Amino acid sequence: MKFAWIDLRTVPSERLESVLDAALHSRVHGVLCDDEKLLKDLPPTVMGVNPTVVTDEAQLGDLGPEAVGWVDVHDDRTLRLACAAAVVLPHTVVRFADPTKIPLEIVLAAADRADGRLVTACADLEEAGIVLDVLERGSDGVLLAPASADEVFALTRLLRADSPPLELTTLTVDRVEHHGLGDRVCVDTCSHFAEDEGILVGSYSTGFILCCSETHPLPYMPTRPFRVNAGALHSYVLGPGNRTNYLSELRSGSTTLAVDAEGRTRRVLVGRAKLESRPLLTVTAHAADGTEVSLTVQDDWHVRVLGPGGKVLNVTELRQGDELLGHLATDQRHVGLPIGEFCKES
Figure 1 (cartoon, rainbow, N blue to C red):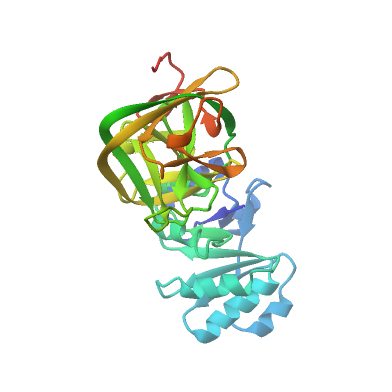
Figure 2 (figure 1 turned 135 degrees about the horizontal axis):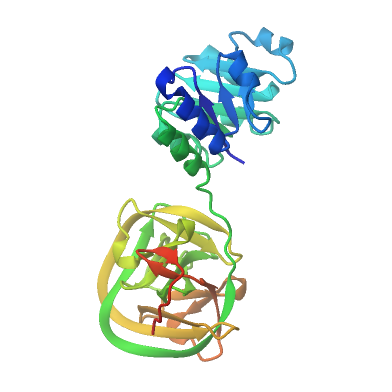
């Protein structure tokens, strides 16, 4: 579980109280401060941090079992020191002089099987977001000296930006209808999809079908493991935080949600959204509770959806009674956000 520490040492005195209140309200994991009285007054749920600056490996053996080490990395010797500290200490704070994240990658690799937690000092929220994803694993924790209470809240939101699993349901195909020309969107991401992964797309905000990525071989064309031929531009696509977008809204830099056949999810960055006019068809299916789900996609054999167990199904070969994987959402939507209001879609 990722966590955040707040460094109060450079916070202006006039903002100290509001920043500390925000940290406690946000339930940050730890507070770093030189004021021993302030540290003693912290609630038991918040760790008071007063690190020991480590300048030599010989120090490591003298530090107690609850010690927090601090290493400034600015050359090869201090990089090796940070690696050694991260292996043996319960908590190691590392501050890097250079903007490159390669030294952090080296420390993460060195401490990969260690029990200790690595905390990376960050200059701002943007760096904190990068640090949390380095080598996919990322730093266990981040340390930030916030300029205001707002930055404390923003940091804790960043930590909560994980991607919980979704409950998938089995849908039964009712009919497939062929239409004329319309506009469809291919979503090209900056990630490599797994074979049982795709994105959830639907014409109605309450139901989605798991559209397959182009990771599987196709005749006449190479695989494109970064792509999902997702559907008509009016369609909803389910993204992080239970928020939807229209496919027409996705563009380079957008974030959407990759979902596998077990319901595991992860955020993926959109590299581009490709809109082209193509013949379309609509798949209509229903869930066990009778909820109707609709998906309009390109009318072509190479467009695929996923069924139970990750079975790959070509949309032009779907027949009444075939089973698909989907997701039901109980809320209606207003500008992509769930809202408890009456709305009928058809």
